[in-house]
Every structure is written in structure tokens, then in C-alpha cells.
Length: 102
Image (tube, rainbow, N blue to C red; front, side, top):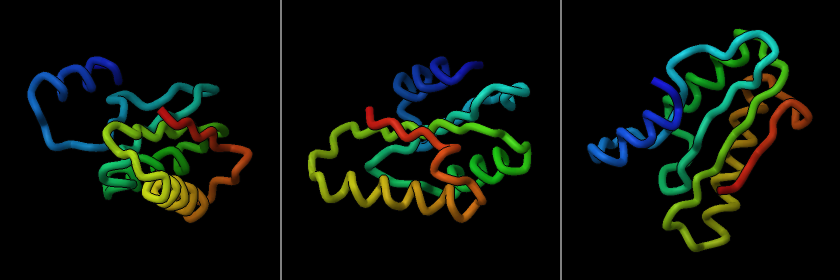
């Protein structure tokens, strides 16, 4: 099941998992992708996924901040800062991480 299939399934079944990751590990040369929901911020599953990316030696990672219903700019900025701190604590440099607000 792919990333978008899982998101669709979660939307249809109302699951509580708020960090979306792909089932299969990225192939060599492909970036890792993790989705962080601004309603929850980086959760334990997010940390595990980022640690897996680091252990795999991925050269490039994309983090998608899913803003959703959050409208407070301060909260969005806080989640973004926490996400950057997570990547830095796992050994990623800012040049290795692309952060996208969605």
C-alpha cells in the first residue's frame, strides 16, 4: 500500500494515526518522505521514521507539514521548529531536509 493509499484509507476509516509514512523503505537515491500533522506535531512514529531514514543513510528527506484545520501561525511555527529539531537530533543537516507546508 502506498503513501496516498494509506492516507485515503485513514480518511475513510477514521484511524487515529496522525503521522503518515510509506510502507516500503525508499530505494537508493530516492528521498524519504514523512508527513507531520500540525494538530499533533512530530509524534513517536515520526521519530522512528526519521531514525530509520538516518540509519539507511538517505541523502535527502522531505517532511510535509500537513496544516489541516490549524489556523494559528504560532502553532504552525512551533510544529515546524519541533520538526527541524527532530531532524537535527537525528543527524540531518538543513541542506538534507526539504520542509513543505501543505
